[in-house]
Image (cartoon, rainbow over all chains, first blue to last red; front, side):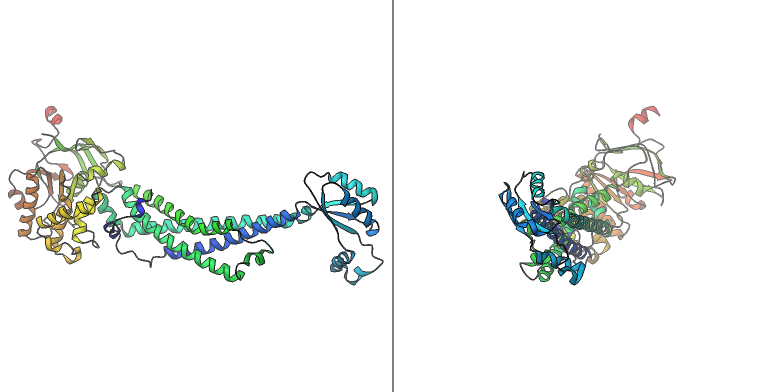
Length: 289
Length: 235
């Protein structure tokens, strides 16, 4: 299957001295560099969304508009309810500090009614409706809100950014493929005479194709590895070492799987370039007799 | 005697132009020696291209080695091309390859390993008098030397059909005679040889050779000596 990669020196000589001055490795290197950075960003965003989503999956807030007068019995009722795994009241000072952003110093006025807020986590299958009724029996007007509802717009934006990153990776891959097609056609034009002679002595299209496929595969491998190494260096520099993604994404880090995916990207780009080159050359050759 | 090539009502046109070859009916007998003659523009090179499968006819049928190849799929042609040796007027040597590699090309294309290539190529280069020029590249060879490398490449696979387009057009008369000597030697070994030439002296110096004369793209064969047998019976 990969026998085309291992050709004899005489076969190698057929295309003349291989030159690295050709633009293909450079183009592939730039594409690989960009793809790696965008993919790393996309993966970090995905991890951030995952961390955030998991953290708020089972978290709810009990809002008491009337304030903290019934706080103690509410806390007690929640703690004694089956399936409630943790209960934590938000201190009034914290609530006032939050309100300060909108109200300024007036937020600290004793006349201002400050609603009470109790955050709690539940196990799967807990009847939230029953829990809410229980709370309303103590503090009429109390209601339960899911944290995920308030964070949904942020998660939606993160998902959109991941889609954009994935789309950019696809677009850059398509641009790299287009560059390879142009390079393959250019190489065919350059070596048209040699190809004619080879066909004349009975070479098959596959034999001719293998020569170009090998050359472009080597160019693509060199370019994509160079681009990948440069991207890795930039990521490390930007992130300041191993904790880069943690700081970059607010807690989420790139895991082993992400690093494997990133490491495989240059190889995937090489495989794509090789396949595209093979297809382009075979198609071009079939246009001749 | 079996035919190497059979042309049946063959016509050829390039693009939408007029036909450059019309109604060609002939057969080339195995082991024979042919000279293809005709004025410039008569269609000699086009006819040779049909013979060495570089061109498909726009009408009619061509059989080579007993196989109908006019409409054969592209991937079916390489095995037949390997049975044909071609000597071009402009040599068509690959400039960046040595004489050795140029001559070895048909063997390598046919899948020969390096150790199977060395001996025959050295022998062939010696046969054409270029044993000491094996590592030279075409631009450093004289016209005659390049022509001999081209001939060595054409015959290295012991082709059943050898096609040569004006092979002596770029060499002096002494070299021309020497090249013709190579062709006749090959013909004696059983190869069918077709040489396109303007040079009447070559024809007269090759006893037993037959003439294929082209005039404005048609075959000048009033006696029907070259025609297909079934047409001879009906005429």
